[in-house]
Length: 214
Image 1 (cartoon, rainbow, N blue to C red):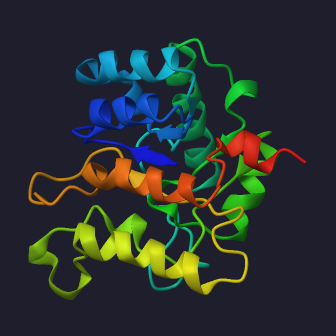
Image 2 (image 1 turned 180 degrees about the vertical axis):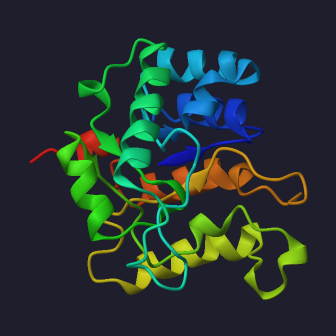
């Protein structure tokens, strides 16, 4: 699964790699991403290639406090409006709410109240599977010990896969479609290597709806 808000520098490269390996993926973008004229060609390409397009909110709001998770930073009205706006942006690309029923919250950070509000909106909240550092591909060196190099991220996936009894079966691996220019070591350039590694282990790479369909 890929997320995007203000950056999309890896988009066309990612689309090309997925096409080469005959893989369909899930892309969760914010409403402002869908409305950004600079990303129009990319979004059209992803839609044409048959990837899942979903919502990552509209304005990438932080729903709850980083240190006190049960403290909400948005009201129900703010949440509902932001979510509605994001699906209106998706609709402009011919994607209905029913077709994009899986919602990935901004910052991948939420609590049980946000989960309940999402369900009440007719959507299903999803998140990445913890255990690897793939979601740290947005970091840059000036972040100090929070920074993770692309090689370190890749090795974290391989290590997790080899150590777990079930490997990466059912795993949701999250990567960003673009990152801040301050990060020059772009993890998406290792995507082809990652896909080859997974396919050599007989994994089937599926979209979120395919994976979660019971």
